[in-house]
Length: 491
Image (cartoon, rainbow, N blue to C red; front, side, top):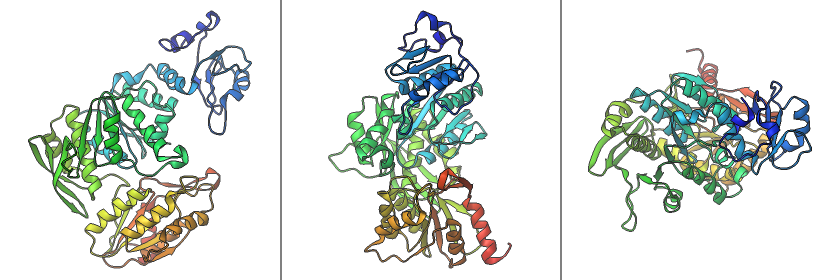
């Protein structure tokens, strides 16, 4: 591809000598191996400035350097915002595949994975071929692909969208993270529909303040045609006043006389340990819903799916009666791990105070025995939420097992010390076991009849991240099976 074709339609000025240069690839990553003739985009990050590598990239065969200031090399193109430009270049390199499909973006602290997964399953049941981009995995139809982050970096994102377009996907359902939005990874993507779930404390290590976090999420509503907003959440109510795109609302909480009721709502809600039941309401339309995931938050999640489908042109009654009511749960989201014993083990991704409270209160609602919560907190992440998570767990469980999550480069015991500060003044009993495998073994060996053991924080993950970025295999389903064999013998 000629350089002039790569930047066609973009606010980039090329000298005549550069227009016909043949480009063989594009990257902003100095670690990538590329053929001679690639374009390198200099991006300044938190710890490394790509501008410092410009001369080296020319030596390695770069044909052109995109930069924000003079780097002293030949064939440089100076632009105002390289981070903003890069995803547009990536999209052009892959033939702008985002234009060929209908994009649905879901953002919020909690609920993104459940909503995107269930929405993809639902649309697939209607015969639509769908792509999924998210936290657990990426999917092209029935093909499952690994994922490194919720919203991929620009090159990987548009490479994935190209594969989805080539596979003739009609829809792409994407979890859109606050960091991905702030870093402009989605570039020219225009979303048919943007869904907001909720905003609770998380990622302050990245955004610094809740206001910054709020504003980062808000960016999605500047690149969509219409929005679906959860007005049970205060941030959702605020977005509704501030965004300019057409917006429709959903909610489960009865509003007071001073508030506008949600366009899509739930009535006669019944919560159980194995799922929820409620009446879906939209104007005069009412339908009975049953959804095989517990908790009021899953009333909200399933309500969002039904509302999204109707906004995309599908009949709500058909969505509910023939699709949603027959659907099973989502991996790592209140997922029951078989034990063959008289107690239950549930695996959930809850890793924020709000998520811990939601999943534990939902499970406790139908529990006959004690609810025991095993959890830790990630290293090199928002440390302020650690005691908050402990307090939320103590208020909603009968016993706590404090352990590690992904410690990364922090001392696991120091992380636990931070967690335990949240238990001051609480009378919920707990045990401290730093090694997560040992903690699960202990929980299984000491389980009593009708206990429900909630393994919180890992969910779908099948690894732990240790010091130096070492990622070791750690699938809690496997660990539970091993713990059961160790405690009770081979089944």
